[in-house]
Length: 303
Image 1 (cartoon, rainbow, N blue to C red):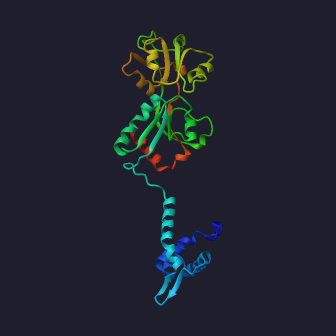
Image 2 (cartoon, rainbow, N blue to C red; image 1 turned 180 degrees about the horizontal axis):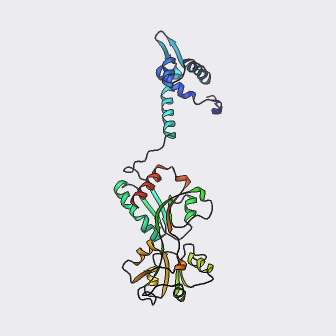
Image 3 (cartoon, rainbow, N blue to C red; image 1 turned 180 degrees about the vertical axis):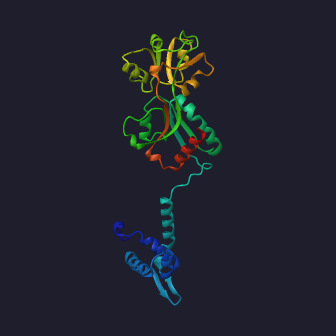
């Protein structure tokens, strides 16, 4: 078999060749291709040179296929059908899909925003699987490495933000969480009272001060930090029967206090924060993936 340099071959001619072999007629092939008859005739001459074969041969009944063309036709039909499927956008059918959807978020962020998704999957895509990761770590590193499809967080990437897409899925403000038996539970929480207390902090990375500490530093003040946690789920256990205060997003705090001897208080006016936004993030690599597009739409609808 002679070696062929594909770079020297005009692959567009294969589309013309298929019409010529199927119609066995230059004029009808030209009509099907919306080309002029001379252009198709020129293409046929180039094809004959490329394949070193007449391809279409004259008979008393008109053109017929050469032996090489007879062998080429089914292979060409299969090849071009495969190329069409390769280029066409894949179809996503939820009821038949067996994809694995991988999501990362902290425990209570997942409880607030991701748990409703499993109801949708069980109803509309029962063969799909949802894998949720909640271990404390860098959210955006997982997206960057392709380990997860989505990340739910109120944080923002510190670098290369242009490679991420996001969807706003929730908004909340901050509140102070404390035991209902705390001495400050029955009064308005002023900054001076707040600073007399001991505090707990939820730190995802385990490093650096919290947002509240940054605000206090700007005011020239500092709080006593007695406890640092890496997730929200255990906050209630650490403040229900102690004198510790936590500042949490209200939507998360509402989950924490359910059934516990805990109250929510407005944070001191000096520590009021703007609205906290929660986003669903995904990497650019998955932006046009049909499965991920469907998941994003369903999350938006259920949230």
